[in-house]
Image (tube, helix red, strand yellow):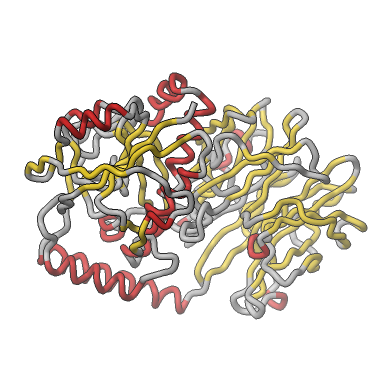
Length: 544
């Protein structure tokens, strides 16, 4: 049975992200859009914004307008397969709220909608909220535990919030206080509200189709029951924010300008730099990774040009030797290569570049099976993942072919029972970030793969725990996934995620430990965690 959907729109001319959202819904075989209700008296949901705020937003848009622009106006009737009947709606307008007249409610009710999607109108009140079986759905572009109201993506930038949320809610009579259906977090842009909002609005375009697939797969009763896990318990009063007045905006703008000027000067002087860290693997180490005392392995100064560095360590024990594979970033070519060196417990031997392509390489995942060793590095820049086989370990490798088609970041493999699992970060749209969402694919074979998407992809949509940070490992009959937390900045810290459920139709994980950068040593980040029976390796981010 298909879910019957009604759209609420202010016009046929909508933002590009709405166009994309509707287009994605129309691709879903288990959903049909049965009506577009068009507002005949569209009106702002609040007072006219203060002048200085409007001036700032115009300047911000002019300076930081990026392509693709989520807010570019476009006629939704240009969508392929658009053949949707329309209904003109003249709402009863009271202050900032819209109510539907009885004759319109009757027409909408007669269509027996499962879902009404609000892409227009103001704050909805009254009987319209009760008609659809699964409710009226609406986006709140911001963390609903941080603020209600708006503007979208604005306050996170101005108040230096690490992340910006996007929430899909089932509306209630209370503003921005409906039942949460889906929540995602992306890294807040430190400089531009325009860029910050652009990213989260594009992400919104893909959320509704995901929920349609989830409802179809799980069934309505199970889906509704599991929604309780998304509901936050917060007794504190959540502020209702609005565009700032003149003096408030002036203060915010001045602060934004000078803090970013300072940041740009610092970044211009101090370049990004990574070092590899090591510690002995003691009996208790993996029970509490955050308590491990790492020390730095400094690369030879003669071996690296200014701006070059080592990162992403992946160790392998073989023939009584510890071989360390890592990204060797060359500043002159502005790309990573894969290098290897032997670790004797005190020093790394002279490293050797074992893999270099026309594109950037990093994250050298090593996979061992049937007495063969394979190398699966990240090659997102090439829009493919390649697999290499050791001909003469560890220095000579042969490219076997393409393991996975498409842009994918930090590929991580694990085998559970008879299935190989591939975890990667991907973008649902070119306007979003590659840090936000984790996708899982399974295949019965690794060397001749036939990857099937997990039923709930993306299985994580949160920049604070999505991107892989090393091999998935087993400890005490439990699976653990090192994950990057890039909320504050890329590669800020590592979270250890315990995988509670991993099947073709279920995924659940929770954070059990957090590895923080050692700020006493001026470390700004750490984003890899790997080990052997003898040693544990990580990395550290600085600006030097």
